Length: 454
Image 1 (tube, rainbow, N blue to C red):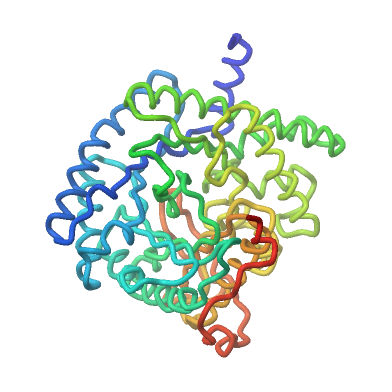
Image 2 (image 1 turned 135 degrees about the vertical axis):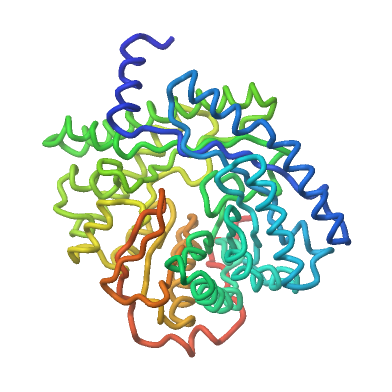
């Protein structure tokens, strides 16, 4: 039973520590929309999303008002479009038309983003999947709400290096086509290894084929809450530090569980998972980097940062799984540079580099996330950075992701501004030595030996 002390404590988390439900994401299966005629496919997609999502924003707003819990985003994820549109889409232009219908219906039901313009190509690309990937620059230029992801690797299948090579070129082209807005199109494109089927966070969300027809996922965030809790045990040992994070994660997850169950009941849609990812915002005090500083590091990037992140990620997961039977998605700590003021400060003063961010990927929820790099970075260099992250995920049997933004017209030390929750980021230097011959070999890096578990 919830007592008055817990009510007061939760109110304090919301009002003073930036606790929020970052997203309610409605997952929708589109496999029953398949047609070999593009106009029929578009109409089927439009009608199904409109029907299933028509009440999502209204219900989210009602819950927010009634319980006083901020719900920052309402979003939709759909079945990877490469699976849905293969029969109908015969050209890049066809895929752009499908993206436009997704954008149209997302705006009509008033969600913030719609994810799932995606392809799963960890063992190789079909011709249709390659078309979808090649359509991404135009898709991300011509739409506002559509988010895309491409899964190019897994611990079971290895890494599709042909897709990695292609995506270096696609990211560079997307940057160029959206250069008037600091190459923001790249902020809506994520490259994954071991992408989960039930991730509610953009830009990587899609509705996996293992999911039901429709499902509600909730993503909760609370870096500010964790930071405040750790300030109370500033000089304590690691046992106390870990217990504090774990107990705080439990409380945060219970808030998400409440919202998820209520949304599920009101929408008559099954509840899927709670994703307890400590996703920062540009607001002061809502920062993963500031948690590190509270732990005792001068800045994010100082020696000990990877250990601090490993500790944080693990205790967040332990607290979350005690609070809900259905914790999923990514659930841990995000380290997006542009969305975390403490990370931005660490980059600006030279404490945090791309190489350190890559090391931190081994123990965080994602990877090189919202990292701005010089606009003249070669596509092969971008592909090499993707390959490194994918290898970390494949070998360590975890999700890794890359969201790199080569900001056209900007160089190291300049600042790119993306607005809203996407924030702003100083442009980081990248290693200038070539990896061209390695990246252009083609084919697939095989799965590691520990993948053979059947």
